[in-house]
Length: 190
Image (cartoon, rainbow, N blue to C red):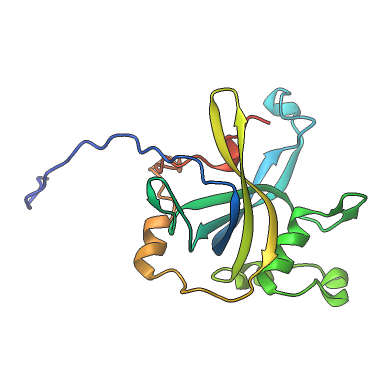
């Protein structure tokens, strides 16, 4: 079989994304997915001895902001390793509580607490907006974007266009590995 059309394959250099400045940004939930990962306590054990747990990964895309390089609209930031259960401890509500409440612009009600949060509920949050508090974290010679809090939206902004969503969507290669070069929260070494 031969290629029957004109093509020109170009080399692309690794893209650099400077840290997002510390601030609160309006964002849109672009995607949420679940994956199975070794628990924190067993992640360094041999593979056959690791205990696995399901965690949620939320992909937020900024709708506003700028830095010294230009506009931040369309930049992604992730909340990874979000537990698949709701709890409140002496420090307050866990990440999942905060994310759901911010995206649905109201507290989780008693029915949601009793019946649980279903995949339909999580999927219904895609496309919703909230404000996220972002703070850079420096580890060694790298700086990572870290979401420190989720807040309900005061006023929704212009949502992402289909083109912006496509550009922000993580593309995967044939082995399922991300080909986008943007640093994600799960790259943070702690």
